Image (cartoon, rainbow, N blue to C red; front, side):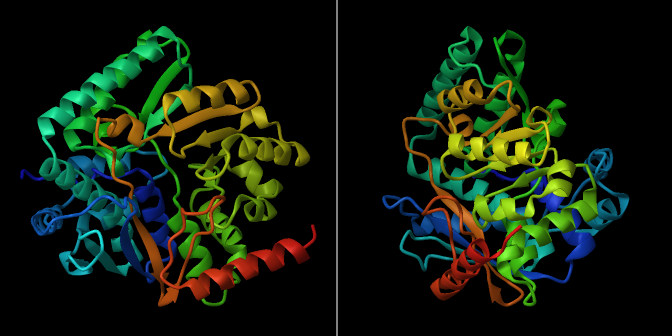
Length: 403
Protein backbone atom coordinates (compact mmCIF):
# COMPACT_ATOMS: atom_id res chain seq x y z
CA UNK A 1 0.00 0.00 0.00
CA UNK A 2 1.01 3.61 -0.55
CA UNK A 3 2.01 5.73 2.42
CA UNK A 4 -1.14 6.64 4.40
CA UNK A 5 0.19 9.48 6.58
CA UNK A 6 2.10 11.92 4.37
CA UNK A 7 2.58 14.85 6.75
CA UNK A 8 2.91 15.39 10.48
CA UNK A 9 0.14 17.97 10.09
CA UNK A 10 -2.17 15.05 9.31
CA UNK A 11 -3.59 14.94 12.81
CA UNK A 12 -6.36 16.66 14.76
CA UNK A 13 -5.87 20.26 15.79
CA UNK A 14 -6.26 19.57 19.48
CA UNK A 15 -3.05 17.56 19.41
CA UNK A 16 -1.18 20.82 18.85
CA UNK A 17 -3.15 22.84 21.40
CA UNK A 18 -2.59 20.15 24.03
CA UNK A 19 0.94 19.54 22.77
CA UNK A 20 2.01 23.12 23.34
CA UNK A 21 0.65 23.12 26.90
CA UNK A 22 2.32 19.76 27.54
CA UNK A 23 5.63 21.10 26.23
CA UNK A 24 5.53 24.17 28.45
CA UNK A 25 4.14 22.62 31.63
CA UNK A 26 4.35 18.80 31.61
CA UNK A 27 7.30 17.86 29.43
CA UNK A 28 8.53 15.30 31.99
CA UNK A 29 5.23 13.37 32.12
CA UNK A 30 5.28 9.81 30.77
CA UNK A 31 2.23 7.97 29.51
CA UNK A 32 1.06 4.58 28.25
CA UNK A 33 -1.61 4.32 25.56
CA UNK A 34 -3.59 1.21 24.61
CA UNK A 35 -5.54 0.36 21.46
CA UNK A 36 -9.02 -1.15 21.66
CA UNK A 37 -11.41 -2.35 18.98
CA UNK A 38 -14.99 -2.25 20.27
CA UNK A 39 -16.44 -4.09 17.25
CA UNK A 40 -17.08 -7.71 18.24
CA UNK A 41 -17.23 -8.92 14.62
CA UNK A 42 -13.92 -7.42 13.42
CA UNK A 43 -10.67 -9.35 13.11
CA UNK A 44 -7.32 -8.04 11.90
CA UNK A 45 -5.40 -10.64 9.93
CA UNK A 46 -1.62 -11.08 10.36
CA UNK A 47 -1.17 -9.48 6.93
CA UNK A 48 -3.10 -6.41 8.12
CA UNK A 49 -1.01 -6.18 11.27
CA UNK A 50 2.16 -6.42 9.19
CA UNK A 51 0.97 -3.59 6.94
CA UNK A 52 -0.04 -1.45 9.94
CA UNK A 53 3.46 -1.93 11.36
CA UNK A 54 5.00 -0.94 7.99
CA UNK A 55 2.84 2.18 7.81
CA UNK A 56 3.82 3.18 11.36
CA UNK A 57 7.49 2.82 10.41
CA UNK A 58 6.97 5.16 7.44
CA UNK A 59 5.08 7.63 9.64
CA UNK A 60 8.00 7.64 12.07
CA UNK A 61 10.29 8.79 9.25
CA UNK A 62 8.44 12.10 8.80
CA UNK A 63 9.61 15.54 9.94
CA UNK A 64 7.84 18.90 9.82
CA UNK A 65 8.72 21.01 6.78
CA UNK A 66 9.50 24.71 7.12
CA UNK A 67 6.32 25.51 5.20
CA UNK A 68 4.28 23.52 7.71
CA UNK A 69 6.03 25.19 10.64
CA UNK A 70 5.34 28.63 9.15
CA UNK A 71 1.68 27.70 8.93
CA UNK A 72 1.57 26.69 12.60
CA UNK A 73 3.52 29.79 13.61
CA UNK A 74 0.81 31.99 12.10
CA UNK A 75 -1.92 30.53 14.30
CA UNK A 76 -2.44 33.22 16.94
CA UNK A 77 -2.26 30.99 20.01
CA UNK A 78 0.77 28.92 18.94
CA UNK A 79 4.04 30.22 20.40
CA UNK A 80 7.44 30.35 18.73
CA UNK A 81 9.04 28.20 21.42
CA UNK A 82 6.69 25.32 20.59
CA UNK A 83 7.29 25.72 16.86
CA UNK A 84 11.04 25.52 17.49
CA UNK A 85 10.47 22.30 19.44
CA UNK A 86 8.43 20.84 16.57
CA UNK A 87 11.26 21.69 14.18
CA UNK A 88 13.34 19.07 16.00
CA UNK A 89 10.56 16.61 16.81
CA UNK A 90 9.71 13.39 15.02
CA UNK A 91 7.84 10.19 15.96
CA UNK A 92 9.87 7.32 17.47
CA UNK A 93 9.10 3.82 16.24
CA UNK A 94 10.71 2.54 19.45
CA UNK A 95 7.73 3.93 21.38
CA UNK A 96 5.36 1.48 19.63
CA UNK A 97 4.60 -2.16 20.40
CA UNK A 98 2.52 -3.76 17.64
CA UNK A 99 1.53 -7.43 17.69
CA UNK A 100 -1.25 -9.94 16.98
CA UNK A 101 -1.67 -10.72 20.69
CA UNK A 102 -5.29 -9.61 21.07
CA UNK A 103 -8.75 -11.09 20.59
CA UNK A 104 -9.36 -8.82 17.59
CA UNK A 105 -5.97 -9.79 16.11
CA UNK A 106 -4.30 -6.41 16.71
CA UNK A 107 -2.60 -5.16 19.85
CA UNK A 108 -0.94 -1.75 19.96
CA UNK A 109 0.63 0.06 22.88
CA UNK A 110 2.72 3.19 22.96
CA UNK A 111 4.96 4.19 25.86
CA UNK A 112 7.12 7.25 26.34
CA UNK A 113 6.90 10.92 27.12
CA UNK A 114 3.44 12.44 26.91
CA UNK A 115 4.91 14.87 24.36
CA UNK A 116 5.52 11.93 22.04
CA UNK A 117 2.73 9.48 22.76
CA UNK A 118 -0.04 12.07 22.55
CA UNK A 119 0.93 12.77 18.95
CA UNK A 120 0.66 9.10 17.91
CA UNK A 121 -3.04 8.52 18.62
CA UNK A 122 -4.70 10.07 15.57
CA UNK A 123 -2.25 8.97 12.83
CA UNK A 124 -2.27 5.42 14.23
CA UNK A 125 -6.07 5.20 14.16
CA UNK A 126 -6.13 6.60 10.62
CA UNK A 127 -3.60 3.96 9.57
CA UNK A 128 -5.54 1.12 11.21
CA UNK A 129 -8.79 2.19 9.55
CA UNK A 130 -7.40 2.55 6.05
CA UNK A 131 -5.42 -0.70 6.17
CA UNK A 132 -8.47 -2.60 7.42
CA UNK A 133 -10.89 -1.30 4.81
CA UNK A 134 -8.49 -1.58 1.88
CA UNK A 135 -7.54 -5.15 2.81
CA UNK A 136 -10.89 -6.52 3.99
CA UNK A 137 -13.24 -5.20 1.31
CA UNK A 138 -13.51 -4.12 -2.30
CA UNK A 139 -12.19 -0.61 -1.77
CA UNK A 140 -13.53 0.75 -5.09
CA UNK A 141 -17.03 -0.38 -4.15
CA UNK A 142 -16.66 1.21 -0.72
CA UNK A 143 -15.57 4.51 -2.28
CA UNK A 144 -18.46 4.46 -4.73
CA UNK A 145 -20.88 3.89 -1.85
CA UNK A 146 -19.15 6.62 0.17
CA UNK A 147 -19.41 9.23 -2.59
CA UNK A 148 -23.03 8.40 -3.33
CA UNK A 149 -24.02 8.79 0.30
CA UNK A 150 -21.91 11.94 0.69
CA UNK A 151 -23.64 13.61 -2.26
CA UNK A 152 -27.06 12.65 -0.89
CA UNK A 153 -26.42 14.11 2.56
CA UNK A 154 -24.99 17.33 1.08
CA UNK A 155 -28.15 17.69 -0.99
CA UNK A 156 -30.23 17.51 2.19
CA UNK A 157 -28.29 20.47 3.57
CA UNK A 158 -28.82 22.33 0.30
CA UNK A 159 -32.59 21.74 0.27
CA UNK A 160 -32.90 22.64 3.94
CA UNK A 161 -34.17 19.22 5.00
CA UNK A 162 -31.43 19.50 7.61
CA UNK A 163 -30.32 22.84 9.05
CA UNK A 164 -27.47 22.56 11.55
CA UNK A 165 -25.81 25.98 11.73
CA UNK A 166 -22.02 25.91 12.08
CA UNK A 167 -20.27 22.56 11.96
CA UNK A 168 -16.76 21.17 11.48
CA UNK A 169 -15.58 17.90 9.98
CA UNK A 170 -14.06 15.77 12.77
CA UNK A 171 -13.54 12.45 10.98
CA UNK A 172 -9.80 11.85 10.74
CA UNK A 173 -9.50 9.14 13.41
CA UNK A 174 -12.19 6.90 11.91
CA UNK A 175 -12.10 7.82 8.22
CA UNK A 176 -12.46 5.32 5.44
CA UNK A 177 -9.24 6.64 3.91
CA UNK A 178 -7.30 9.82 3.33
CA UNK A 179 -8.85 10.00 -0.12
CA UNK A 180 -12.37 9.75 1.31
CA UNK A 181 -11.85 12.40 3.97
CA UNK A 182 -10.36 14.85 1.49
CA UNK A 183 -13.25 14.29 -0.91
CA UNK A 184 -15.73 14.92 1.90
CA UNK A 185 -14.05 18.12 3.08
CA UNK A 186 -13.81 19.53 -0.46
CA UNK A 187 -17.39 18.70 -1.44
CA UNK A 188 -18.96 19.86 1.83
CA UNK A 189 -17.11 23.18 1.95
CA UNK A 190 -17.61 23.86 -1.77
CA UNK A 191 -21.37 23.60 -1.21
CA UNK A 192 -21.38 26.13 1.67
CA UNK A 193 -22.80 28.83 -0.60
CA UNK A 194 -25.84 26.66 -1.36
CA UNK A 195 -26.87 25.63 2.16
CA UNK A 196 -30.02 27.06 3.71
CA UNK A 197 -29.02 27.41 7.36
CA UNK A 198 -25.79 25.41 7.63
CA UNK A 199 -22.13 26.25 7.22
CA UNK A 200 -19.05 24.04 7.38
CA UNK A 201 -16.52 26.23 9.17
CA UNK A 202 -13.53 23.88 8.97
CA UNK A 203 -11.96 20.54 9.77
CA UNK A 204 -10.00 19.04 12.64
CA UNK A 205 -7.46 17.70 10.10
CA UNK A 206 -4.71 20.33 10.13
CA UNK A 207 -3.19 19.06 6.88
CA UNK A 208 -6.47 19.54 5.01
CA UNK A 209 -7.13 22.87 6.74
CA UNK A 210 -3.80 24.16 5.48
CA UNK A 211 -4.26 22.72 1.99
CA UNK A 212 -7.70 24.25 1.45
CA UNK A 213 -7.49 27.43 3.53
CA UNK A 214 -9.99 26.24 6.16
CA UNK A 215 -10.14 26.80 9.90
CA UNK A 216 -8.44 23.99 11.86
CA UNK A 217 -10.83 23.05 14.68
CA UNK A 218 -10.11 21.58 18.11
CA UNK A 219 -9.04 22.45 21.65
CA UNK A 220 -8.74 19.69 24.27
CA UNK A 221 -9.41 15.96 24.62
CA UNK A 222 -10.02 13.67 27.59
CA UNK A 223 -6.32 12.88 27.85
CA UNK A 224 -5.69 16.46 29.00
CA UNK A 225 -7.95 16.20 32.04
CA UNK A 226 -6.89 12.61 32.76
CA UNK A 227 -3.15 13.25 32.73
CA UNK A 228 -3.08 16.73 34.28
CA UNK A 229 -5.62 15.77 36.95
CA UNK A 230 -4.59 12.19 37.67
CA UNK A 231 -0.94 12.01 36.60
CA UNK A 232 0.31 13.87 39.67
CA UNK A 233 0.26 11.44 42.59
CA UNK A 234 -0.47 14.30 45.02
CA UNK A 235 -3.75 15.24 43.32
CA UNK A 236 -7.18 14.12 44.42
CA UNK A 237 -8.54 12.85 41.06
CA UNK A 238 -12.02 14.19 41.85
CA UNK A 239 -10.49 17.64 41.24
CA UNK A 240 -9.03 16.67 37.84
CA UNK A 241 -11.07 19.31 36.04
CA UNK A 242 -9.82 22.13 38.26
CA UNK A 243 -6.16 21.23 37.67
CA UNK A 244 -6.76 20.85 33.92
CA UNK A 245 -8.69 24.11 33.52
CA UNK A 246 -6.16 26.00 35.62
CA UNK A 247 -3.24 24.76 33.49
CA UNK A 248 -5.14 25.56 30.27
CA UNK A 249 -5.84 29.14 31.34
CA UNK A 250 -2.21 29.50 32.35
CA UNK A 251 -1.22 28.56 28.79
CA UNK A 252 -3.90 30.34 26.77
CA UNK A 253 -5.75 32.89 28.88
CA UNK A 254 -8.97 33.63 26.97
CA UNK A 255 -7.73 32.04 23.72
CA UNK A 256 -8.56 28.55 22.49
CA UNK A 257 -11.23 27.99 25.08
CA UNK A 258 -13.73 25.16 24.58
CA UNK A 259 -13.80 23.04 27.75
CA UNK A 260 -14.58 19.31 27.64
CA UNK A 261 -17.02 18.41 30.41
CA UNK A 262 -17.40 14.64 30.72
CA UNK A 263 -14.01 13.18 31.69
CA UNK A 264 -15.10 12.51 35.28
CA UNK A 265 -18.82 13.30 34.71
CA UNK A 266 -20.31 16.66 33.82
CA UNK A 267 -21.83 17.07 37.28
CA UNK A 268 -18.37 16.94 38.82
CA UNK A 269 -17.04 19.26 36.12
CA UNK A 270 -19.61 21.91 37.04
CA UNK A 271 -18.27 21.96 40.61
CA UNK A 272 -15.08 23.51 39.18
CA UNK A 273 -16.56 25.45 36.25
CA UNK A 274 -17.32 28.49 38.37
CA UNK A 275 -17.50 32.16 37.37
CA UNK A 276 -13.85 32.69 36.43
CA UNK A 277 -13.53 29.66 34.17
CA UNK A 278 -17.06 29.95 32.80
CA UNK A 279 -16.22 33.53 31.80
CA UNK A 280 -12.77 32.82 30.37
CA UNK A 281 -13.78 29.76 28.32
CA UNK A 282 -15.80 30.58 25.21
CA UNK A 283 -17.85 27.41 25.53
CA UNK A 284 -18.11 23.73 26.37
CA UNK A 285 -18.11 20.45 24.44
CA UNK A 286 -20.51 17.52 24.80
CA UNK A 287 -19.14 14.01 24.16
CA UNK A 288 -21.33 11.55 26.08
CA UNK A 289 -24.77 11.18 27.61
CA UNK A 290 -28.08 12.72 26.56
CA UNK A 291 -27.18 15.89 24.59
CA UNK A 292 -30.44 17.74 25.33
CA UNK A 293 -30.20 17.04 29.05
CA UNK A 294 -26.55 18.13 28.97
CA UNK A 295 -27.31 21.35 27.10
CA UNK A 296 -30.14 22.30 29.43
CA UNK A 297 -27.89 21.65 32.41
CA UNK A 298 -25.19 23.95 31.00
CA UNK A 299 -27.68 26.71 30.18
CA UNK A 300 -28.96 26.62 33.77
CA UNK A 301 -25.38 26.69 35.05
CA UNK A 302 -24.55 29.78 33.02
CA UNK A 303 -27.77 31.44 34.18
CA UNK A 304 -26.97 30.70 37.82
CA UNK A 305 -23.58 32.36 37.35
CA UNK A 306 -25.14 35.44 35.78
CA UNK A 307 -23.59 34.74 32.37
CA UNK A 308 -25.58 35.27 29.18
CA UNK A 309 -25.51 31.84 27.53
CA UNK A 310 -26.07 33.49 24.14
CA UNK A 311 -22.42 34.58 24.31
CA UNK A 312 -21.22 30.98 24.85
CA UNK A 313 -20.85 27.98 22.54
CA UNK A 314 -22.44 24.58 23.07
CA UNK A 315 -20.34 22.25 20.90
CA UNK A 316 -21.79 18.79 20.30
CA UNK A 317 -19.47 16.01 19.08
CA UNK A 318 -20.87 12.65 20.20
CA UNK A 319 -21.74 10.20 17.39
CA UNK A 320 -23.60 12.79 15.36
CA UNK A 321 -25.29 12.64 11.99
CA UNK A 322 -27.08 15.51 10.24
CA UNK A 323 -30.51 14.44 11.51
CA UNK A 324 -29.47 14.46 15.18
CA UNK A 325 -27.52 17.69 14.71
CA UNK A 326 -30.54 19.34 13.07
CA UNK A 327 -32.79 18.45 16.01
CA UNK A 328 -30.23 19.76 18.50
CA UNK A 329 -29.80 22.96 16.49
CA UNK A 330 -33.55 23.56 16.46
CA UNK A 331 -33.74 22.92 20.20
CA UNK A 332 -30.93 25.25 21.29
CA UNK A 333 -30.65 27.94 18.58
CA UNK A 334 -31.23 31.42 19.91
CA UNK A 335 -30.38 30.29 23.43
CA UNK A 336 -26.63 29.78 22.87
CA UNK A 337 -24.14 29.59 20.04
CA UNK A 338 -24.67 26.04 18.76
CA UNK A 339 -21.92 24.18 16.88
CA UNK A 340 -21.17 20.61 15.88
CA UNK A 341 -18.14 18.42 15.31
CA UNK A 342 -19.26 15.61 13.01
CA UNK A 343 -16.87 12.73 12.37
CA UNK A 344 -17.59 9.21 11.16
CA UNK A 345 -20.91 10.14 9.54
CA UNK A 346 -18.96 12.39 7.16
CA UNK A 347 -15.68 10.51 6.75
CA UNK A 348 -16.75 6.83 6.76
CA UNK A 349 -20.37 6.34 5.76
CA UNK A 350 -20.61 3.33 3.40
CA UNK A 351 -22.57 0.10 3.07
CA UNK A 352 -20.09 -1.41 5.56
CA UNK A 353 -20.16 -0.56 9.26
CA UNK A 354 -17.28 1.68 10.38
CA UNK A 355 -14.73 0.54 12.94
CA UNK A 356 -15.31 1.60 16.52
CA UNK A 357 -11.66 1.84 17.56
CA UNK A 358 -9.92 3.97 20.17
CA UNK A 359 -6.44 4.63 21.44
CA UNK A 360 -6.67 5.76 25.06
CA UNK A 361 -4.31 6.86 27.81
CA UNK A 362 -4.20 4.07 30.39
CA UNK A 363 -1.31 5.22 32.62
CA UNK A 364 0.50 8.45 33.44
CA UNK A 365 3.72 8.63 35.45
CA UNK A 366 3.42 4.98 36.43
CA UNK A 367 -0.11 5.41 37.77
CA UNK A 368 -3.43 4.28 36.32
CA UNK A 369 -5.72 6.92 34.83
CA UNK A 370 -9.35 6.57 33.78
CA UNK A 371 -12.29 8.36 32.23
CA UNK A 372 -15.69 8.21 33.93
CA UNK A 373 -17.96 9.66 31.26
CA UNK A 374 -21.66 10.50 31.37
CA UNK A 375 -22.63 7.14 29.87
CA UNK A 376 -21.42 3.58 30.44
CA UNK A 377 -19.13 1.96 27.88
CA UNK A 378 -16.95 4.91 26.83
CA UNK A 379 -14.33 4.51 29.53
CA UNK A 380 -11.12 2.52 29.29
CA UNK A 381 -8.77 1.53 32.10
CA UNK A 382 -6.55 -1.50 32.73
CA UNK A 383 -7.22 -1.52 36.47
CA UNK A 384 -10.77 -1.91 37.74
CA UNK A 385 -9.60 -1.16 41.28
CA UNK A 386 -8.50 2.29 40.16
CA UNK A 387 -11.87 2.89 38.46
CA UNK A 388 -13.55 1.96 41.74
CA UNK A 389 -11.24 4.34 43.64
CA UNK A 390 -11.89 7.18 41.19
CA UNK A 391 -15.65 6.67 41.42
CA UNK A 392 -15.44 6.73 45.24
CA UNK A 393 -13.46 10.00 45.12
CA UNK A 394 -16.03 11.59 42.81
CA UNK A 395 -18.94 10.33 44.89
CA UNK A 396 -17.41 11.60 48.13
CA UNK A 397 -16.85 15.04 46.65
CA UNK A 398 -20.36 15.25 45.18
CA UNK A 399 -21.95 14.17 48.48
CA UNK A 400 -19.80 16.17 50.88
CA UNK A 401 -18.46 19.33 49.27
CA UNK A 402 -20.70 22.39 49.54
CA UNK A 403 -20.41 25.63 47.62
